[in-house]
Amino acid sequence: MTHASMLAIGVDGGASGVRALLVRRRADGLLEAAGEVARRDHTPFGADDFVTQRAEAANPYLADVEIEAARERVRATADVVAAAAGEARRIPLGICWPGQKSADGRGIVVMRNGPRDPAFLDQLEAELAARGIELAAPIPRLASDGVTGALGERWAALGGMRDVLNALYFAGGSGLAEALLVAGRVRALDELTPPVPKAFELRIPSWRTTLKALDHGLAVYEDVLSPGRWSPPASHVHRVRRMGEARGHVDWSNAVRRDPERTSSTLRVAADALVRYIQDRMQRLREQAGVVPERAVVGARLGALIAMPETREMLHDRIVEHLRAAGLPDDFVRASTLLEAPCFGAAALALGLQDEACPS
Image (tube, rainbow, N blue to C red; front, side, top):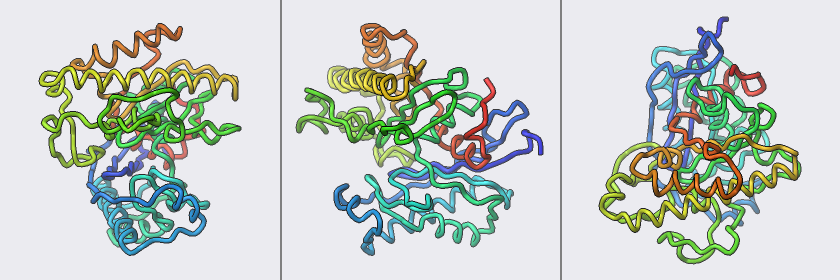
């Protein structure tokens, strides 16, 4: 089978919705879209606290409302896979989903922004069969959106990590997805020994934010680097039904024009926190693995914000200023607008590319 004839579907699940993309492997080995992104929204779900979830991770107790919310997400996933597949009825499938995975990699046992579902893949396979979709191979273990986002940036023709061997990956949306590129291989934070703490586990030292949603006191890095957790003026929030927008999409161009002081304050906090977090990551990698990242790729909504001309002075330029002060090159942070990176990465998993050398 030639590269050009290889197709797969990558699925990116999140707190507010799920999307799927049919992906083609080109003759040069890189990945490109072979269709349009299919999307479905989720009904919001208030998850139990982390302490409770972690205590019962080995055998989660799910109330009826959580079971139904999980089933809704399974049905939505099957719908987008069928829509993305088009006329293809037999195809490889890879999936990323947030939360702590079950021991067999087929379910979710801890979830910060949605329902748990220990039998997610079992139920999904049944729903796909009912829709006439045949799997060309077993679905790989559920992956994190951080790992698949980084794989997408590594393997997609428009990816931002194709020309480096060591890099950081962050994707800020409703949460902060993270992964590492070490010696050309994408790795989750907990693959290192000892594991690298995640953004929701680390408070920002001696830091009190000015963000309305976080002004109760010290914040963790995930809160400050996730645009979906910010609270800009309500007049700049537009109700749109789009994946990853958590029921409210901020028109930042309009926010810059109508409330530059508030918008600048929000974005400057994010810029400061991002560089501090990059410094934290780099120090830990040097000490734990002797790795020096060549680049930090920032994706999802946070990456799109950094790339926006309207926010350049408030966000991009401030990041560059802090990079210089930290002794890093101005272009160390690369803003990615490849919003489908996790779909590409999930398709890469379905095609078994995670351990292959990527064409540069």
